[in-house]
Amino acid sequence: MNIEHFNFSLPEELIAQAPTQIRSQSRLLVYTYQEYLDENFYNLPKYINNNDLLVFNDTKVLKARVYGTKDTGGVIEILIERIIDTNQALVQIKANKSPQIGKNLYFGKYNARVIERILPFYKLEFNDDILKILDELGHLPLPPYIKRADNKNDEERYQTIFAKNLGAVAAPTASLHFDESIIKKLEIKGVKYDYLTLHVGSGTFMPVKTEDITKHVMHTEPYALNNALIQNIKETKANGGKIIAVGTTALRALESAYNKDNVVKSFGETNIFITPGYKFNIVDGLITNFHLPKSTLLMLLSAFIGIDNMKKVYNHAIDSKYRFFSYGDAMLCWRKQC
Image (cartoon, rainbow, N blue to C red):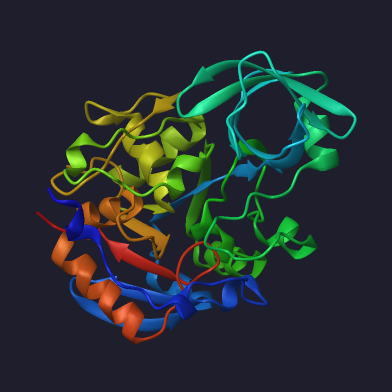
């Protein structure tokens, strides 16, 4: 399938540069079987049944961007991709000239040695606890399309209200719209919700560069489901309820955990690449933000509702001036019926 099927033109002014003042004040596009409804996110509970199950991703974003210098004095920027242990991590490095293996990088009173190149990353060994260094010197890794530096407001708003398990370098952005008032409405209605963990990697922002999308190499991310969630999924399905993934990360984890009519894999590494033609086994509904052109997330949405429907939805969103990407608005959609 050609990459141009997933391309579209987006006016720059629709790329959200900051969150709404209140989380649930964002807009919500409800899409059901080719029908559009322009809504407010705080009305989401109206469209969820009391026998449905919402599944959130409770990952917490690392302050994963750190600025430093090489031994030559050249300025560098690193982005932690994954912490391996207390002192080692896989990172992206931005510099005028790539650092050599064995060289030291300096971050204030701390340093790190480049010990290996594992494309597209470097493996670094730090001289102190990585989490300590990030806590002191790190910046939240706002996506590249947000054209400003991170600030104190981002420290709260680029985390979900239930962020718990530290390890992501990007937020599960569909969950950023939820606040205590929405959760309370869901509870009053009797809607169940539960959590899994998938640590979002920087690859989530990478566009597909191959003309034939089947040749794209998907990034890998770790995920974990607890036994209570697995049981909740089984009970919801048995009672005729729908499983609604809050975000593409939750959807990828759930579909990765599927095995022969059951959710049985409670943890693992996933590089699942969901494209049109994929048969969904767990997820019935999806709450998601509006995604980048040519991105794997847009391909996932196209698999979920159909390519033609995706194009109609995005044309409507652009014409209606919805805000796009991480700090943008959201949509609720249901899986295309085969």
